[in-house]
Image (cartoon, rainbow over all chains, first blue to last red; front, side, top):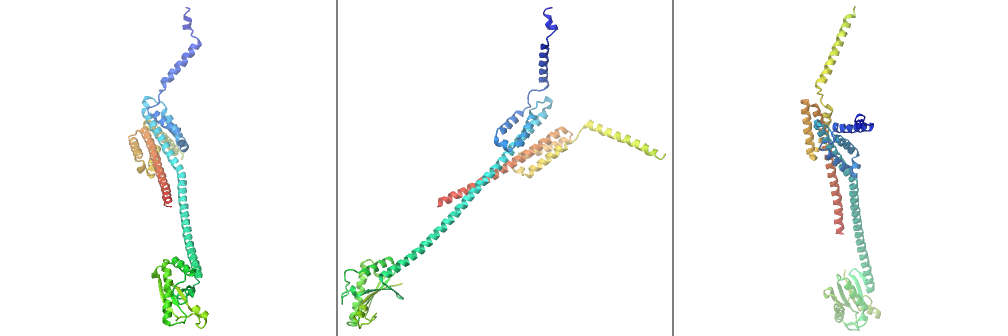
Length: 286
Length: 133
């Protein structure tokens, strides 16, 4: 009798626990607790996409749709609904794949802007370089032209200066440099030693302009016989040639001629005139 | 007097319409083989879109799968397995959508590679040009 009251009159708490327990058990029995096969794989793939910020950014809507499809696929179904379960898993799997492909496409498209900028930069750089090259080339060409002009101007100026220094006259035969008779002792063909500045200048000039040839002409006044004067004038011209060749001027560049007294430049009536006529002319040919 | 035949006719028509309706409803309830027209049309449209996007070239496997599923769905319709037909049509639709998505992905990647190459070619040209100087 004393033990029975528990059986006969169970407390409210015990009844409550039993109800809760049985309801849990009933629920567990009614709903199969496992997701259909394949749903876990779809979930794993979806989770991988969702944890990738690039994918989330580029396929937000598609991922949401895929999430919905995966959740549906995860719904436990009765054994007799295996075909539906399989269908849902298939759909979920495809939706996840679509989200991945779309995200990749949009990512590529976004990267394209960057690529396009890079290409534009490269193109620009290349063009800039081309322009720079063209400019540099133009500058070089201009400099070369300027240098050439400068050179020829300088050469002309130098030549002019040399000519001036030689005190040569420009004639239609060429530059004519007149060496006065002071270089020679009277009646002698020997060059006087000493300061032959004009001849030194001539050597310099001929070294400077190796393409120029010279003709050396000896002239005399009318004192003495024509034959004597002719010989003397030639000998003097040859003395000048010897002077030049001894200083390295090639003899083939030098022609020698004795004119004698045939071409006076002044009157032989006066001493001054005769002195002017006694001369050696160096004609620098064009 | 003159209205009587009309009234009789009306009563007859009412009975007839009611009978027809009942028959229709009954037949609908009895076999219920309504083809999943919308799903089938969606699947066909999706396949067409994929084909237009050149999926045959870029995602042939996905496109073939979609077409096979559509064919199976149409066969299921003819055999009045409408539930199966609807599921197959839906599968065909997503397969075609995947074919299109993968086609676009492949195309986008190809374009990017092309752009990379052309930028690289320019840079290479510059490097060579630079060497010449």
